[in-house]
Amino acid sequence: MSVHHARARRRWAALTATAVVLAACTPGADSPGSSDGTGSQTGTDGSSDGGGDPAGEGGEGSDTPAAAPVADPEQTVLAGGTAAELSVEASRAFFESAPVVVVAAQDEQLAAASAGVALGVPVLVDGPGVAEEVERLGAETALTVGPVEDPGVDVLAVEDAQALAEVLDVEGPAEPVPDGEQVQALVGLEPGARTVLTGADQDDTPPGADTDAATRTAGDPAGQTEAPAEPLESDVEELPETSAPEPVDGVTVMTTGVDRDVAAVASARAVGAPVLVVPEGDPRATSETVQALADADPRTVIGIGEEFGAAQTLAWRAQTAATGVELPGGGQLVLPDKTYVALYGNPTTSSLGVLGEQGPEETVERAEEVAAPYADLTDEPVVPALEIIATVASSDAGADGNYSNEMDLETLRPLVDLAEEHGMYVVLDLQPGRTDFLTQAKVYEELLRRPHVGLALDPEWRLGPSEVHLQQIGQVDVAEVDAVVDWLADLTRDHDLPQKMLVLHQFQTRMIPGADEVDQSRTEVAVLIHADGQGAQADKQGTWRSLHDHAPSVPYWGWKNFYDEDLPGPLSPEQTMQVEPTPDFISYQ
Image 1: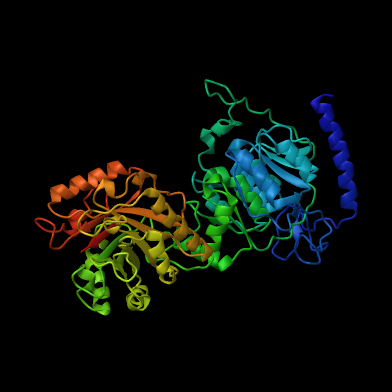
Image 2: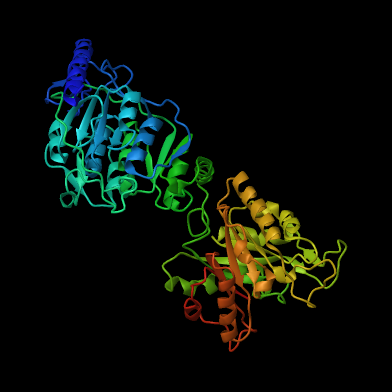
């Protein structure tokens, strides 16, 4: 059977079905035309009728057919690599059925997307799986924008955005949107809004061209795109009247905001789901996304694009963000995009660093003063911090035989409390002697449950079974560090805490053999290597380069300025920020 004859038969069946539907409906109610502001809707011919929709809106109470949203969408990540794949996944995620669908050519996605939001129907991008999805939805009519493959049902075909505006009875020209801003413009549309958007540079793209490299013909060494589809002829003169679908409840959708996501975002907006732009793919990353999720408190989150990771990953990140708790400097990620400036030492003595040279209130004030000059040297937030030695290496074995004195939590708590009040970050430093780091970390679990408290491991003071301090420099293997990473990450996730900083002190590569292999896959934790070398500045720079060469995969680094031991003295803030790469964590001892 020819395509022409097949389409003719479909058209006859669709027109018969449409006639039956319209005979049972009140003409003009909740049609795909524009609203007159009184609760009634106009059809594509501009006619208006206030009857037929007792609720004053589509969905329940309306006689006209409406798309049926998925009642309880699953928590998921739509991981398709192309706009076409994502559009099909989004349609399946948000819609059980739809009497009408919008199908777009690759270069007409934005216009089609705005039509989908206006009509409350799925938006599909021409490509594999579209015909099957149209069949699954039970659609009888497709509004096609640009040249697309035959979707298998009757079509109302328009060539471009301007022709689409006429079909939707939108006055004035389509609104151009620059590349990179298309999703944001679409997110701002209210469901049912009669606006046609179009790409600002659309005239530079040949009609029907496939702009998505991922849809190129497989095995084509020249990288040529498939031939564009032939323009379809309309089978119907206007769209059947439809009602707006019932809006979904308790669902928040996330996108990184790339133009690829336009059609998928439109399907989400068509069912009334709020869409949050998360450029980093991690809702914990910024204050804006954290507070938006806290306000929404969604039951279900759906990510558009593989940037959001696995569904389980997105779920716990969103749950954490929904607490609304933020770190000093904003958001829920300790790194990147922040610079920490810390005082180092123990609050009970001045012999272990400047942190103990004054009382708690004065310590906090001093930390703020030391950090202040850095604010003019970086565009990142500068976070004053305290690195508190919580377990102190000892020359005596002690009652537990581990050559380490564990500070009482009540001794540390006042300073931790003050730091929180002043918007400062705290790192608890461990010098474990003959015990292991994980055993000591667990002693401070109560404090580590505080959002603004992280952890530091100091291998210099990690002794073997027969070693004593100051007779050799300690070391720790990667397996022991990874055990701390896992425990700290689990603690963070189990209690919906912002990301934790894990500082690894080092001034010789032998202190953490294989440091480059430390587990960085747990994004509940940000691993940072802190270069602790002291002495002549040339030697410190040599240590800095050697440590980087030893662990090139670690992205975050710390630098220590010693007031008394550095020669000819500690670097100034300006000099410290000229160290390459620029340190993320700067401490003073």
